[in-house]
Amino acid sequence: MVMKQIALYGKGGIGKSTTSANLSAALSLQGLDILQIGCDPKRDSTRMLMHGSFIPTVMDLVRERGDAAISLPEIVYSGFNGVRCVEAGGPEPGVGCAGRGIIATFQLLEKFGALTGDVIVYDVLGDVVCGGFAMPMREGYAQEIYLVTSGELMSLYAANNICKAINRLSSRVKSKCRLAGVICNAKNQPREEELVAEFARRVNSSLVQFIPRDRVVQVAELNRQTVIEFDPGSAQAEHYRVLARRVMENTRFTIPTPLEIDDLEALAVEFM
Amino acid sequence: MTLKPSPSNSCRYGGCTLTGALSVTTHVRDAVTVVHGSKGCTHHNFSLLHATSLDNDVPVIPNLVSTGLSETDIIFGGEQALDRTLDSVLRDDPGVVFVLSTCVVDIIGDDVRMVCGKERGVPVIPVPTAGFLGGTFQDGVNKALIALAGMAEGSTANKARTVDNKERASVNIIGEKNLEFEINENYAEVTRLLSSIGIPVNIRFVHDLSSAQIPSLGAARVNILRDPALVPVGEYLKKRFKTPYISSFPLGLSGTPAFIKTVADVCGVDCRDAVAEEQVLQAETLAAFADLEGATVSFENALVDPSAVPAAKKLARALDLHIKKNGRPVPVPTTPPIGVAGTRRMLHRWRRAIHA
Image (cartoon, rainbow over all chains, first blue to last red; front, side, top):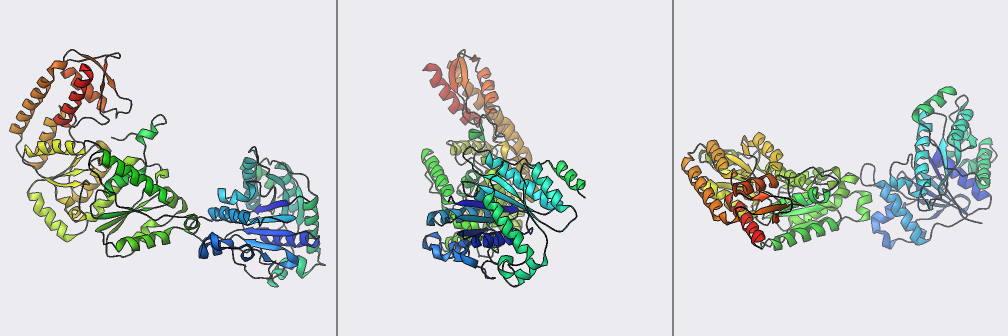
């Protein structure tokens, strides 16, 4: 099969890493070879797949030794069910240029030929704050972008902003980057699913999966596991497995049409 | 005089802030200038400064050191690289170290001032020179001069000397164009005028200066700016040292008597004889070029500072030349000719062009 490369973007704290890790876990249980790459200096994307341990990041190794002395096994770690995990890492908060760190990580992974497998899942920091964090969308890396959002306005606002970035990048001649859908990681607000589905429709996409808020997510995290591993029989685990199936079956990849802020607010008011 | 960059000639008038600052700091004899950025910024400027000084027949090997930032430094921040470079530079015992920033370190937000603030026993002076923030070559010059002037502040020895020296009137020459071909001729013309009224130069700030001379910056009775683009520096010095300034070297023939009068007034000396002699010299100068009378000329001024053109026109009228579009092209220097000597050099070139 053709290698699938997907990226999850969304507001900070919305649950991208939890969703990514559970998605990767569920995909691996379909018998697929999965590579998950955390693109955030906070480096906690793959932690649940690694049973709570923070793996050394690519940027940690570059900082200690320079990129010449690094080998592939030092940056790729095998987690739950063989999911391969990489953390880009980055500078300490408040110094340097984390965006350039992402670019350097991609170049290094490219050099090692590490970007292989059936599916690569890129879990990217909060917002597309600069060109560096748009890197996973560029140069033909992630071709399918999923927005993770709740029904809260600020979260939709961030998702809408990311639509602007995708829109800009997808207009480039050679760009294959497209919006693949919206994942609602719910805060259990009234009419949240309807709201996010309507938002998805308005930005020329669709709601791929509604994931309700469930305490099992926190309990699994406290046990340093994904929900898929911790409680495979739970309804929540089934939501993630459905998401994984839909991601694999998805063929609707669009150029998004971001909303004006006034329209976005009016939309949120409509579903209050 | 520096102009606002405009799309049609920004390459000529905008320039690199870093280069502007370097044209100043490399003229402090016992200084090392650290350029905080990737090594190309240093290499390129080294070449430019060296080649220009060779061209001007006063070879200078600019004392530059690059922090040589790599991609890793950009990702994790370049402050440590700067700290390391400063430690190694200080082993050679410089009188002062200047730290000039480049575009990339201001993009990633290195705290250059903080690193320079660490106590090292030698003054380490930061000059913010990231060009992408919109600064021009001239902004770099001004920022460097103001940063250097900071070294003259607060020392009590300096205050005492300032009072002493102000008794005896002297002037500072501020912001000479260290990269211009006629820098020493222009300086000589100004000192000729000053000595006609018995006023000495305190320091050339900054041309071939030692850092030990900087504390006497406040000792002059008046600061003479090279050109009006340095007014922000003049204002700064006025505020700090209460020293008034004259905003330009004297331009053309007509500038010199006025210049003598202004300096004499500030310094409280009599200038009547000097002005009378200067007027005689002007008449002699025009007489020496009387053979040009009646010629039809046009000005070659593609890259010229616009303020040079009125000065040239005025001179042409004084010599009874006709200015016509299809006249014999005569060169106008990039910056207006300074005083009688500058005017003479220009007229020699006109004569060559007219008689060619």
